Image 1 (cartoon, rainbow, N blue to C red):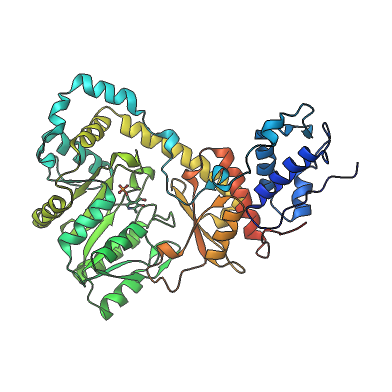
Image 2: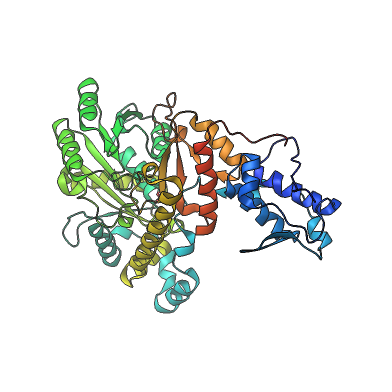
Length: 462
Ligand SMILES: Cc1ncc(COP(=O)(O)O)c(C=O)c1O
């Protein structure tokens, strides 16, 4: 029989699903006879102008439906004994097989196991106490755990220092914005930054202006110029494993930016949610200019996002205002969650989790460098994500749409852009969001192919 070629249905959808559907149809109709061999994946990818990853995924989907079998080293064959029902099953849908690298899921597979921790908690603690209203940051155990966490993050407060406890770093951003600034105030941030902070500013009617960056992060000269032109009140930074670029601001830059903050009397909101994942990050701004810096160290990315606990160091004169904002927003974080976070800090679970995640992230970055090329991957190797510059031929939104059609979710630049009218031509790829390394490899293979072939769009008919 002449080499089989798929007939792809017109009407779009991700290419790998169209291809999988074509295989299933041809198996059903007998055009692909039992026992016959499917084309080699690389050759079929070339024929279709697609990536090998796309063909691999299509074959996997068809295999999961019981239509074909792949044997490493031998090839892919149509099954001799078809399970007719599964071959004829429901139409393939995108959602079931999208590898979504657009959301910063912090490696769910590496997180602590909750069930036994809750059982131990119930045995060892008067859990009834956790149902009461209580001033959490005055309870010595919680305060000690928070200070331990923040010191591990590189702040330099003495033991027993006052802390704030919030329901995650997003909540800390809201609380500090409310406590330190007024509606209409100007806050400066990296020109591409964490969208959660932009949404806080929008909701609270604070203005944000983006400051130019280079390959290391915010440019001191650009910050100085902006301070000359305007009268900003605060500077928002995510200096370690920055969201979305994965960059770490070098020490010299930190010192220069801190100096400018002092010269122009800016308060500094240092959101270091990802810091503990980095192996040897430079000093915090909070250790350089502690009297004007609010340091946020969250549990979410380093341990688990569902626990909703962050610890904050604030210059003492702002503590009361920040506590009022916590009170106005949630009264207090949930004592149950703060108890659990404290226990995990005390018994080592939190630190073990951080170490496991770091190891897995380094491995995923190795894969990314191999597939996308070392030059394309500028993020530091423990970052949850990387920023992919698209170069000539791709606009960010177009690349995102085409990647999604081919079964891979990425985030376009617009949500991160302070100036939404000028989103840069890049996308964020969240390496930690793939369920496993194999899915990551395939998804990155698809993206690498797209990147190298700006003209390639999902073919309609072959
Ligand atoms: C820079 C930054 N800050 C804050 C957050 C929110 O963290 P949390 O889950 O602790 O609210 C994120 C989450 O992605 C983030 O990347």
